[in-house]
Image (tube, rainbow, N blue to C red):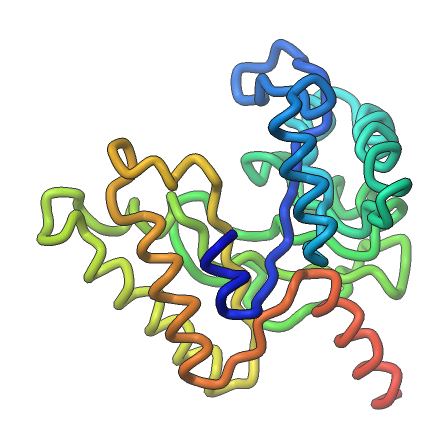
Amino acid sequence: LRFELSLGVRSSWFIYAAPWSGWKWDLLYDFRLDKSMRRLLEFLLSEDYEVGPHSSMASAVVDPKLLDGEVDRLNRFLRPRGGRCSGVRQHELAGKCTERTLEFSSRFAYDTSIGFNNSVGFRSGVSTPYTPVDSRSESFLELPLSLMDNSLFNMVRSDEPNYGLDNATKIGRNLLDDVRKVSGMVVLNWHPHVWDQERYPRWAQAYFDLVHYALETNAWIAPAQQVADHWIRRRAKMS
């Protein structure tokens, strides 16, 4: 946060808002019971960060109606403080893309879950926002995820010099360069737990390096909702 605030950039934070479902890959924390988490969310909102839901595995695999409770739970915290659930990212990028689009497009302005768990790049083949053909809303956008921390570091070896940071940064910069040539968009996804330098050496540094590089090459860095709003306005002017 100090890093982003010092540069005047903002990111989107996706918060898990479901009670524990018993699913192996679902998360254990409950932001409503954690004072430090609530203070963090209040600080994010006060600094014009976007906060949205990190939808659960259970809502993706068992019953999509569970998502309504997750959104309502988070909105009850956000709305009195000036926030709202505008977009979503699916935990573990789980679920079938078509089914997920049907559910998300009836609830949100955008999703940013179409991406790879084990590599970088564009799973849907494009580097710009788009409306999926099976969307229930013409204004719903998919912001394709292209660069996630664990996917990036899965492509390098931790026993390389500097714990693989140099190669990881090179891969990320090459992706940024390729996308800039076509006036596209790169969506980064970094998890808070990778700031634990003992367990994830240099993972946070890769984020710092890539943000610096993006700014040096005149990229626009913005929360997902701002990007979605910009794209909708742009598309309206072209229609």
